[in-house]
Length: 250
Ligand code: G
Ligand code: G
Ligand code: NA
Ligand code: MN
Image (cartoon, rainbow, N blue to C red; front, side):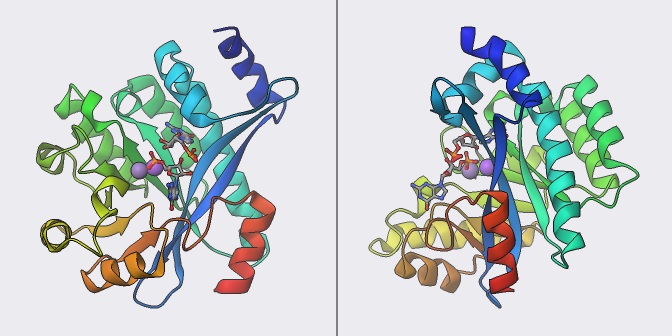
């Protein structure tokens, strides 16, 4: 927990940065958007992974400051890319708890309104959403402000059909656990195909995450996935490398 008292300072001193992982369209190979992922380079402890500090930030409530910082940083990076002729939507991870946090909503909308940001909120940990009514209102407010909504980690753990009913989203993000055996297993392909058809029927685009090979990429493309993310397309990249990636690929 000593760590967490340092997080607030870390946000001010640029110890925390955003890396960006591209999502590639299967139709034409262009980049649909990039997902921002936090990295913490501690001056003494070295690299601290988000899998360690995000859960603690959630528990201590610092996830709000971290996510607000991410919005500011992403808007800044997006503007810097635009100045170099690169336009790309940026996806930010927003936990289910923050989705229903009124103070966060007010602040997030303040940060977004009035600048021509192109953002997507990936709603993570949908399992913790205990107030569907407030979640729906928040989603409507974000969409009215031009923010697209993605349901993250779909099909994993407790993220289920009820979230499709509850959350009016633009994108469905299929969890990596569901696509691992998609090349070998006809049963898994059927599950993906049905999920893709369901999402398309509800007006959502579908992205698969965690794709590490060409075979999995091609299989998912054939099953109708609109967008693919994973090491096969690109690892999460520091900002400078992202700019190079975008200038090279699109
Ligand atoms: O970035 P990986 O590269 O290691 O991320 C590990 C986990 O941390 C993932 O579940 C990812 O969604 C989460 N994560 C990374 N950055 C953020 C962030 O800014 N906010 C939230 N809520 N989760 C994040
Ligand atoms: O929870 P979320 O889906 O936001 O987390 C994404 C996590 O998955 C990050 O930790 C990211 O670094 C990781 N990731 C991204 N692409 C791949 C991949 O192709 N394979 C694996 N194993 N992990 C990936
Ligand atoms: Na995510
Ligand atoms: Mn995910």
